[in-house]
Amino acid sequence: MKVSPSILAADFLNLGEAVDMLNASADFIHLDIMDGEFVPNISYGFPVVEAVARRAAVGLDAHLMTVHPDRWFGILAELGVGMISFHQEAAGRKTSSYIAAIHALGARAGVAIDPDVPISRLFPYIGKADFFLIMSVFAGFGGQKFIYDSLDRVEALRNEIGKRGFDSDIEVDGGVDLSNAAALKEAGATVLVAGSSVFRSPDPAAAVLALKKV
Ligand code: DX5
Ligand code: ZN
Image 1 (cartoon, protein in one colour):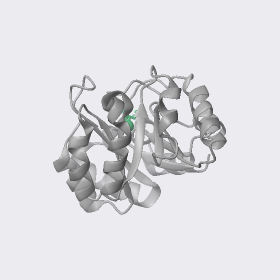
Image 2 (cartoon, helix red, strand yellow):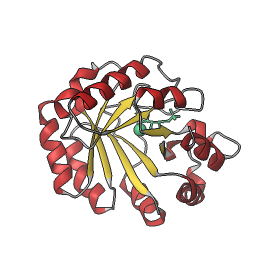
Image 3 (tube, protein in one colour):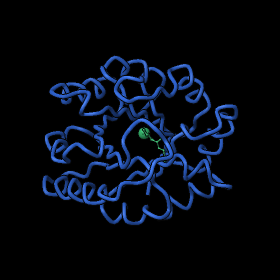
């Protein structure tokens, strides 16, 4: 299992240490970009992404929870972010062109959806997007409880991807911890995002490694 810990839950006064810890334990570093409009919260912006990028030795995985996500693809790619995801709810009919725009910048493109969006809304992008980001909480805040319906959604998407002969990654984000990670793997998830369960753990590096071993 690949693990992409979200630094939203890290101690921002010690962000360098958090990045060093993830360099030694994680597959990717998940960056939650919120604009206060697509979601009712603001996280952090590009100066923070730039600082993390300077220190990171593993790939960066940016999750845009913004309106007009396409405004930010260029700067993220320039900062060295290799995985860029945006919400289908924010992109609408422009979803395919946004995927192409991310590819043109040399990054992997992901399409994200909140728990209340039908999973079939992602089906047209199978074979176009490199990965899908299934929210297992409503986007906007760390530390929420995992929504169990997400397991069926992951499984339905995995089946559809398989039926069409593709092998895209499915990343699951929100309330992920050791109590649901095995079921997520079973359902077809290949990348787990974890914020609180890593950074609220007494041993964050061990928490990352435990998720990887699932
Ligand atoms: C929520 C973010 C998540 C969040 C995960 O809007 O997209 O990435 O930080 O944090 P936990 O693991 O605490 O739910
Ligand atoms: Zn996220």
